[in-house]
Amino acid sequence: SMSRPTIRPATLADISQLIDEPLPFRIRAWTVEQDDKVLGVGGFAFQPGGVIAAFVLKAEGAEKYPLALHKAGRFAMKEAERSGYRRIVALAEAANPHAEPWLERLGFKLKMVDNVKTWIWEASS
Image 1 (cartoon, rainbow, N blue to C red):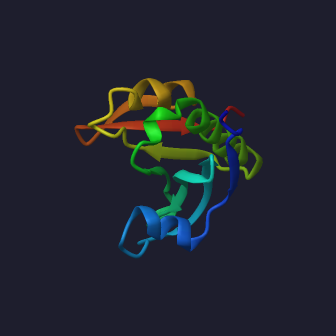
Image 2 (cartoon, rainbow, N blue to C red):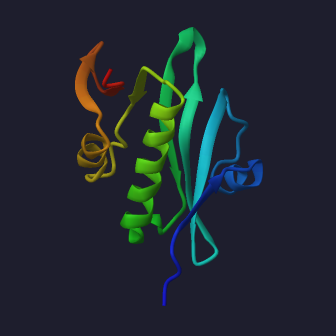
């Protein structure tokens, strides 16, 4: 039977499993694991000019665990609120038909920014 997904702070080792280049920005991220497999790493990248961008790096086969990924996304957004982030931007993964509905469920709203579909989350108060 499947174990429950765990969410823990991401390590460089987790990230290097998923991409083989150095991260361009300072990040705050978490790893979601299930059955001892790293499914993905997600969190926030702090870009120049004070922009906070949400990102997700998924391992191959991660889409078989939609609930674990959703739980991790909700966890990250709660952390964003707790940390007092005011505005987070995200781009939907073009190849993934579930990306846009998922961002919407996490509270992002679609805006066109320079002709690019951009998903924006804003703190409620």
